[in-house]
Length: 390
Image (tube, rainbow, N blue to C red; front, side):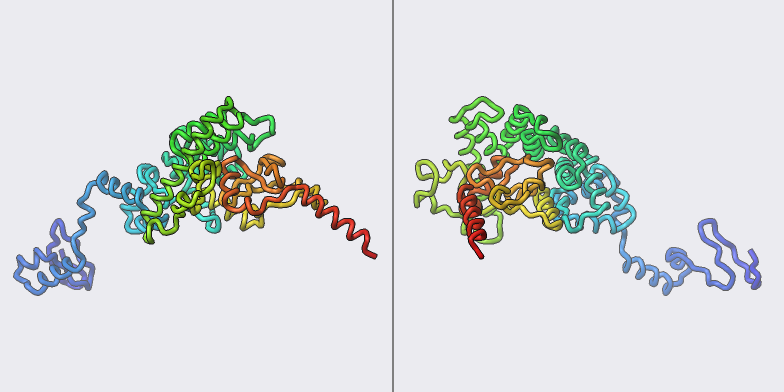
C-alpha cells in the first residue's frame, strides 16, 4: 500500500495501518522476531509496570460471591461505594440483588443528618432485594418520620414475615396503640401474639412487654407467674447481651458492669437484680439504627422527648401536640393525640410501650417522677401569690 508521502508498506491482517506521518508501532513479539532488542525490552517493561489483570480471568459468579461476602461484613456504606467506584465490571456486578440482599446492618446505618433521596433509594433497593434489616429500618423511617403509614407498615410486615424480631415487636407496639388510625383500631390480641413471636426469638423488649401484659392481663389471659418468669428471662437475656458486648470491646470487658450488685443485695425481690421488674442496672446498650435515626430526626426539628407537666398544672394546652415517647432512645412519636400511655403517678411522661417505661424508669424517670397533686398544689400556690401581690 502506498501512502501520500510515497512510502510503501504491507499492512498485516491483525495490525492497524499507521496514519500519514506516524511511525508504525510493532508488538514486542514482532520486534523480537525482527531482532529489535531495544523495542522488545521496552514493551516488556511496560507490561511489568502495569501488571497482569487477574480480575479479568475470574468468572463473574466467583466475583459476585466475593462481593456478597464483602457486603455482608461491610462496616459502613462507604465500603460498598468504594468497590463500586473501582471499575466498570465491579460497578455492574455490585448492582445485583444478591449483593444488596447481603448488605450488613452496619452498611445500612444511615444518619438523619445525611438523609436524602439517594439514601432512600439505596435502602429501597436493599429492601426490594429481600434484606430484612433494610425493610425494618426503612419501614420505621417511613411510618414514624415521613408519615407514610401504609408504606412503612408494609415494609415492617415484610420484615416480620421473614422472622425479624425487632419488626415483630414494632408491629406489636403499633397494634397495641392503634398507631396510624383511631383508638378503636387497637387490636390487643394481635399485639400480644406478635409480641409473643418476637419474644420467642429472644427480643429483650418483647420479653419484658409480654411479661407485663401477662401480669396485667393486657391482651392475654392474666398469668402473674408466667409474666414474672418472662421478666426474669428478659433480665437474664439483657445481662448476657451486655456481657457479650463488653467482652468484645477493646476496653476491660467487665470493668463497666455493676456485677457487685448481687453481693451487695441489689434491688428487686429477694435482693437479686435479676428479679426486678425493670431489669438490672446495666449500662444502656446502643440504640438500634432505626431508633437512633428517629431520635435525631425529631431532635433536628426541635421535638424533644423530655417529660412535660400536664395541662391542668400549667394552665396551658399542652395536650394539643403530638408527643414523643419519653424514653430518650426510642424515637417513636404519636400518630394521634393521647395515643401513648402516661405515667400513672406524675402524668408527665409518655410511653409507647411498657418496655420503654421500664427502661426509662431505671434510666431517669425514677428520680424525676413527682406525684401530680404536688404540681397542682404548686400551681395553686403560684396563683395565690400572684393574686396577693399589689
